[in-house]
Length: 321
Ligand SMILES: Nc1ncnc2c1ncn2[C@@H]1O[C@H](COP(=O)(O)OP(=O)(O)OP(=O)(O)O)[C@@H](O)[C@H]1O
Ligand SMILES: [Mg+2]
Image 1 (spheres, rainbow, N blue to C red):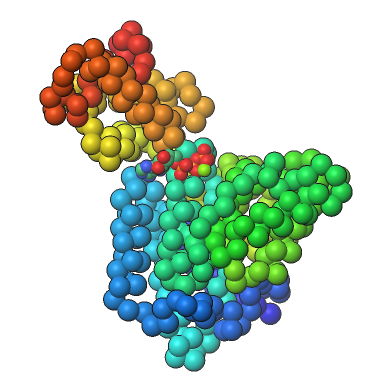
Image 2 (image 1 turned 180 degrees about the vertical axis):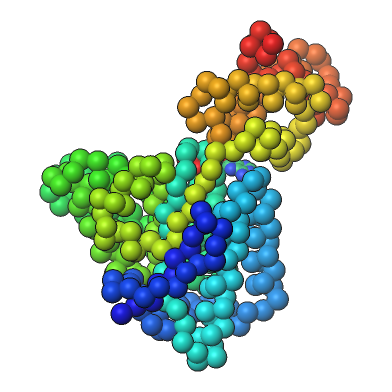
């Protein structure tokens, strides 16, 4: 019998500890990874600073309150299990595979990347890099091809995070589809490399729910579920501000209002409007438009180079009315 921890982001509640007959990926105190060869053994101030820096980077992301709280919880939980191991106390098995549920552009890849870095600093992962893949990277065209393709991706991800976007598409074709073979190969990889890899399956909320229901064996292997809600208009606006700031640009108050107006319009028409990637595209287009405007003059002041005016926004004037 194994003990599993289930985090419950949706209920704003602490993790629950439950016993389970399901064989976990790791079992017993020995599953807490020992520091990798060549890495720091003792937690020193420098390492804690690195962890603090990564958590600050996470904190700097706009919104995502529940996600941030949950990751802080996971970080504290891992740290305490490690301290318990050092004191020769029984520690919970570290099963850290995750399901990310959310629409496109809601920050899933960004957060997965930070988790990789965090876990590397915490010595849960040796490298902490992320390999992102989707169905086409895993599923082959003939018998045996899929297992090989999946193994190749797993190999690349060892020591880091294997992030599978739109993971539900692996179950799309049913029993006869090669997607099933990919799922089996992933489950095997989770057993074979239980301390060397964190698997994150990502996708739209409802599809992921369906996917886990159709694969009951999978659900028990992913104790951490994180929901990424769509961003609100104010959050998208703040994301736009921070993207411009990072590039040393700034909206004038009028341009910021116009940008809000555009976001409002998109929210009503776009299927995934609460989407930071859309904001990034808009910001990048806006910067190009500003460049074209400034290029028409032979010189520009520092102020002019920084300022984004309403006319730089990428929709036509009449769309902004
Ligand atoms: N909370 C946030 N604060 C600031 N920038 C953000 C935030 N969330 C996402 N972004 C930015 O938005 C862009 C898209 O984010 P990301 O790639 O993480 O989304 P995703 O959920 O993985 O999308 P997809 O499902 O389309 O792959 C990135 O440029 C990222 O830096
Ligand atoms: Mg992504």
